[in-house]
Image (tube, rainbow, N blue to C red):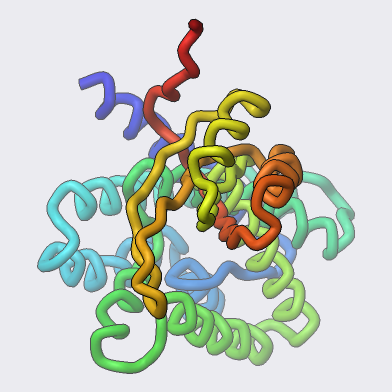
Length: 283
């Protein structure tokens, strides 16, 4: 129950932050978002009518599509987020009456700060197991039919939306919309993955025990040994694996290279680490 309360608290908060960014920054400046929200903003401008209704109406077919493959929990959380977002847009629309929250703000600042707030809101929604944009669901299905990744399909959809925005509004506002989208995308990454990016390190060497021991003693980092076999040589080896902070990378390289100058080191980004770290024994 605590988990559900936490999840839906942050889904609600994320949806309201998203709505605040749309009505407090983007709409008054004729800057649009990507995805379904961007389509809804264009249709609301062309046809008139409440933006919130367009957001719910256009997202509904994608929610039905998601129900078949992505599970009831995801669909319900997504539907909840979309409804709260749409209601938030309606409420904030009446609060701001089409005016930017900060009067006479430069369009570039609107694009940047609107993107930051928007990205934070959407990031909270995604981090807590939901979505607020049906084009992402469409992209997941489209990858099975065409030879493009989910990210590429979403990019193509948004490029089309921003092109249409250039005709509906003007090209200057369409370009600012792209800036907003880029800032929001990067902010979403930070919210979803966190600022404390760690590194996972694989060290392939003939001196795994010596290197592993030095890493544990000199860096106070736990290591794991993985049995492996060379693809060409067929020689049995042990890989040293550990997770460290980005500030420790250089120190680990020095330890490995001092023992084995020919050691092969592979480093990857790790965005989330869970579990108990095994500390070295006190003798």
